[in-house]
Amino acid sequence: MTWTGGCQCGSVRYEFAGEPLALYVCHCIECRRQSASAFGMSLAVPRAGFRLNLEANAAVSWLVTDNAKVALGYRVDAYFDVYDMSGPFDDRDQGDRIIHGPFIKLTVGGGG
Amino acid sequence: MTECAGGCQCGAVRYECASEPFALFICHCTECRRQSASAFGMSLPVSRAGFRLTKGAPGFWSRRSGSGIEIRCAFCSDCGSRLWDEPQDAPDIVVLKGGSLDEPVDMSNAIHIWTASKLPGLAIPEGARQFAGEPTG
Image 1: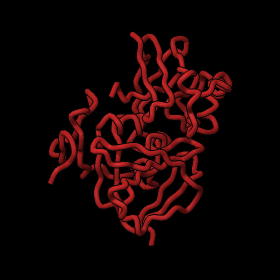
Image 2: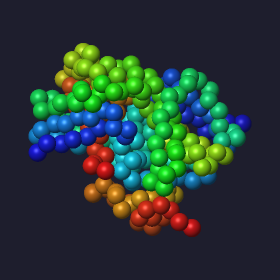
Image 3: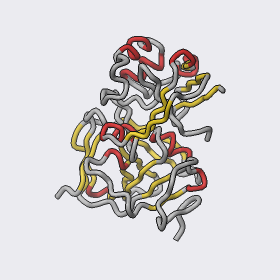
């Protein structure tokens, strides 16, 4: 199936085809900060089926630094390449709540 | 005297409060699910009088609640973490986001709201106060 998601304000949207490989509910301190809630939720999905909606993302104005560069497509590869396959679940998450690599973190906020 | 302190994930924005939060709401609404990118949002209202920014400057964006109230939402412009909300109908309070607090939040007495949109498979503790939508009474 095709999954779609995005941020709260709707500036950044993505979609992917296929099924998540796993759902992790992470209670580490970094994930508590990242979510500003009790835990982070990470769904690993194959990158091959993942696509940012760059046209919609061109309107991003309040996302800055790495988030904006990813959203605007400038550094998507570099951003994903920050991480290697040996450490996808370490604590180097830069706080981007939508994606991180080499797996992709998805907001599971549903369709509402 | 500082009762609680917190900040964003990267540490660029920090805050302190002179009083303790007077409630903990765990909100399962779709907005809070998006806001947290997790299963629910955690909101802890505190007195604005004792709240102060101690480091950095947050970004803000605004949204309207279901009842039309403007909510100014503070976040870190560097790492994207959400920090607190400022409901414009309640200028005397700031609503802290639970995961931004330095001390782990005790969820034992949390009030669960908007449980009608709770994620499937997520358990609410037996005996917890809960409301299908907005809390009443």
